[in-house]
Length: 401
Length: 225
Image (cartoon, rainbow over all chains, first blue to last red; front, side, top):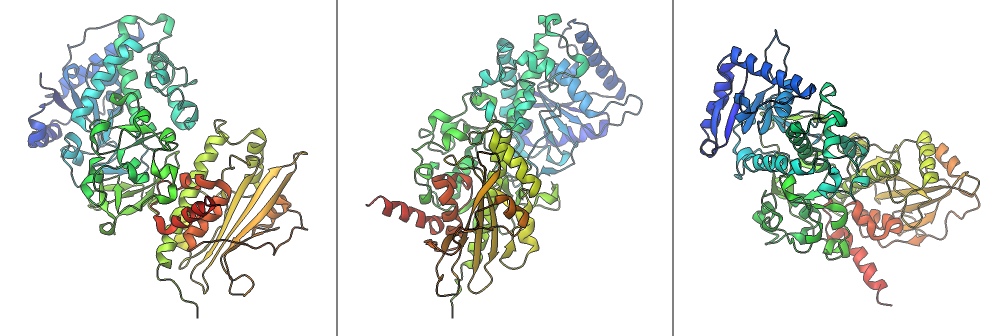
């Protein structure tokens, strides 16, 4: 079955415009069935009300049938945050929450919550949002978001959506069998979690090292909303799918947008070779060798000497959009030249830019700008290429050095 | 007439990069230590940290960048020190780093001052100071050197708290440093405290062998005895 993209906006003209833009991109159009979710405001309101009824049923420990609502069939839900519903006071985040918790939709993309063409210089992501990804409307049909095709502007924080859709689906399915397992144990983070900044580990709950998927969803405050939390002893297991879906998607987001960005707990390919160039396969003088590391394929296929660090890769690769390794272990591996004899480290002619997801020749980076990300990590100094500084909103600009 | 190296501008840029990364690393390490999950400090050292920051704030994440921007050509002086992480071997000591950079002068000046604070057996703060200085124009110290320093900081409050014994010698010994440029000067200075771990502090800095080679040479020559 072809996965579907459904565009959700209470303004039908905008919804149709966005759907048309996606259809006009052949690599997107050939892989997805694209449609707008609601033909008119009445249908829109009715489906929201049905989602709210499911919410009420959940609070009363009742169940419901999935598949009755159009939103249940959305593989990817594109949700405009700029809604005009003066009589309902429904905002985009509320719909994202309802869709995530009480529908069967797959990946949720929030649009325009933080600008129409934003690049976030804090690199912190938006963990509070129940969308899996937040972008601007001008970025919707950016092929770098949907395919492996390199584009001039493509934030490194973006997953590759065609792959990420499967990541979410597989994550939900896997978690169903592990709801009572501590999250840190499930992800192989037991040794790492105690050393994570509390701003990151605290997302899991009061006692991050023992919090299970159930407890995270029902008690942490980052799963279900306050009134939707049911005491575990009262919880009807027939609603385990709600728990699995919320837990899996929120933890996937936590890994992607809170754990990975600092590049000090887990480190991904381009940041790893920037620090340890000896791990790069291929000719170091060639740009393509460096850019191979920006791929989303498995760790054996991104041009890194993976065998040297095979014991340190993240043991749940399907839970991240890109290959990653445990930095504290890699940084102590004496098989790596830069660890053994750090004074032998070669200087690198290429810079990785967070807004293009690619390396660029240092000498051609005169307009590149260094900025300080707002992360609990020592690796806060990053670069952006800024190929289009007028169109793209690089915020907050005080972050530039 | 002293010849100014043409590469001094490039050295300066790398020097600032190194200091920024050392500061970012230090802030992250202290955050870890103060959360109780670090591997270096005990409760006494953490308590000392809280006492020290009441006297002088640690340099902020973006402070060095602002300092460099606001100051003149290759010329800045720290307002707040970098609170370096305790070394693993002397983890009772908290080293505070102060830097004075005047590479635009002739000869170029780069002075590091480090005060190492700790609590003694009566829980009183004590310490010792060091200064790492680039070559003076005077004959006696026309080489890069390290000396003890009784008052390493411009802030007299910090010096008073450091309480370095006044009878310490201030001129001798003047231990020679084999720094070839300002960057290797900084790296060698920090190497004295952290050994190879200094490279962990700057692992994402793009520094080539031009700056690190001297350390490699010294390590090799040490192995030949």
